[in-house]
Structures are given as C-alpha cells and as structure tokens.
Length: 430
DNA sequence: TCTGGGGTCCTAGGACCC
DNA sequence: TCTGGGGTCCTAGGACCC
Image (cartoon, rainbow, N blue to C red; front, top):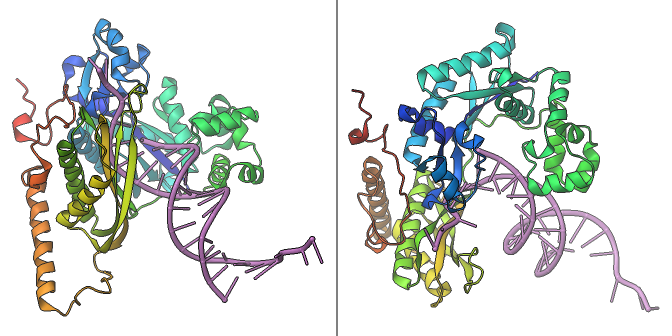
C-alpha cells in the first residue's frame, strides 16, 4: 500500500515573522497581501480575535488597534528562504518529496511503516523541523494524497493529536471524515460545496459514500477522483519533477491609481521585463502574449473599464526587448483616457523549449551568418542581464520601466528586514 | 483612502475536417 | 418532407489550489 504524508507549516508567514521577533511571542500578528491589502496569515492569537483569512485590512482597522495587533507586509524573500530550509530538512528524512507549495510538501512513506511506526515518524519530522529551522509543522499520513490532506486538517484542528494524524486505518479515516465539513476536502471549493450541500452531501464522509459514477455524471471527473481518493484508492501520484510551466503571469494592483498613459506604460514594461526573466529561468520561449488593464471593480460608482488583448509573436522569443515592444503595441491599443486604473498585467504562453525552435517562413535562414551572430549576441546579453540581477535584484533594468519609487509601486508599509538574505539585515543577538 | 498574485485543469460549444 | 457520423482543435469561462 502506498503511504503519503502531508507536512504543512502552521501559519507559515506569521511563524516566519515571529521567529525573528521573539519579543512578539504571545502577541497577535497578521501578514498582509501585496499592497497591504488583505490578511493572508494570522498567528493563533490573531485567529482567536476572530480575524478571518482574506479580510481587507481596512475593514478591521479598529479591532487591530484596540487589540494591539502587529502588522507585517508580505516579505517573500524571507518566506522563500525559510521554505527552502524546511524542504531541505524534509528531503533528508524521506526518500521522495514533492514540494507542493511554499509551505507544504507531500512525502512518499511507502515502506517506512516496516521500520518505524508512522505516528512516531510524524513526531520525529515535527521535532527535527522545529530544532533545525525553528518552525512548527503538522503531519497528516494516509494512503492517498486527499486523505493525507484531511489528516493534516485533523492534526491542526485537534491539539490532542499532538500535530500528527495517521489515517492509514480505514475506520479511523471514516470517523474523522464524519466530523469534517465537505468544503474542507481538497478540491472542493465554495461553489461545489454549495451544490453538494443542496444534494444532502455535507460532510467529507457523505462525499466518500457517494457513487463515483453518479458524481462523474453530475459533476466532473475531478470530483470523481476525489471520491475514490477519500476511499483510499490512490489516483494522484507524487509529482517529483516540477512540470514545465504553461503560462507566466505578472500583474499588480497599483499603490496609487494610474490615470495617465506614461506611468501605465512604465508599469507594463516592468511586468514584461519580470515575466521575460521568469521565462528565461524556465529555459523557454513564448509565442503568445497578453496585456490587460482594469479599473477598481470595488468602486462600482466610478466608471469601469477592463480590457485585455493578445497577440502571436512571429517567432517564439525570450528577449526582453522583443517582448516589451510587443506589449507596448498591445497597451496602446487597449488604453483609454479618462479612467482611474487600478491593476494591469502581462501573460506569456505557448512555450517552446530553447532547443526546438521553429523559424518563421519568411525570416532569413539560420545559415545567414549575420543573423545567427546577432541572435547569439542577444542571447548573451539577456544571460548577462539575468546573472547581474540574480546577484542583486533590480541592478539593471530597461529605461522604459521608470524609477523604482514611481507612484504605481506597491505599498509595503510594514515590511520586515531581509533577515536571512541580506548581510546588512542579519539579526543581532546582544 | 484602503479589497493579492500566480497558477492548473476541465468542460462546453463552435468551427472545421472527411 | 426528408438533411450523417465521427472526429479534432481551439477558445472562453468556470472552478479549484495556495
């Protein structure tokens, strides 16, 4: 029997911030999304105050002040580094690890039960991650990924479990499923749980006991797989190799509204430069490009405008300058004066790998020495650009991006130091 | 004043082919 | 009056995930 474990960090962003601020040990803290918009992580103390996940920060300003909640802006450099430490630790403890998101990993524990009790293994994972990295994790163990997710939910929700739940026993799995609302099942979101509820399927157990064929006919094949997984039939394997991306998106809400063309052009240029960098990081070239702009949909009393436009590139490319040129053309066509823009972004798609290049029919052939030399020079230029920016982000940038302190930049008023990734920000113990 | 960003997969329906 | 059957590909939109 296959055995999976899901290891998930508790309140990951909040735990990262607290780790470097022992003075805040028992204080409620929250971490906000980009632009200091919504709450995306809460310490247990903040949860106890009733602060909900995803709530806009301005709606709870009063409560935050009254309860002296400490606020942090998202510090992704810190979280990514702490995540890597947790994942490396897990890789030293299990034969196969799938990093599923910034704060959770699936482990393949097949065979582990022959030499160690699975719950004891889970406890050991918790101890080692805590001792080596300093972060609390919970461990869910089961014969399918969906059940491992559910086990992890139980481990987090019920402290008496000691942070580890093993559901490899089917009766135990059924007992927990009876207690879990169906919308906590992996793959069941608000829409599905609403439709399921109308059919009398309210708990995870109700869903597990539904007929898979009936579910497929009335919903879809994904939910059918979920039903089977809840019954211990593994349909989802561990994904060891990260699949190649099919799409790269770079978008932001603006710190201040954008009403004129020039700052919008600078913002879109910046998004495109970043997307091109990600594309080269994937060793891919893109053949399709989309630009979109929109006003703030929450301000329904103001004039609304939302438009996106796509184009095919004559030849797949990863050159920042080609991509910016194409994006600028699209932006000119969708831009309308007279609106207060709130967000914009670019999307790259239709990737091909660097070694399988389809030339345009009417382009000079590869044999033409001048064009080949030019193309190699361009590649080297992009490579050098990336090398320098990897060492220090933002060193080299396209003039069209404008300055970093431009009005459209993100709001991050509560940003913590880059404790682990910048020498000047190293924490000091006196 | 203030409401995130970045992805994936599936389905339905239309266009088109022989 | 009567108007096939079987298939592919593409796109938009919906739903989900963290």
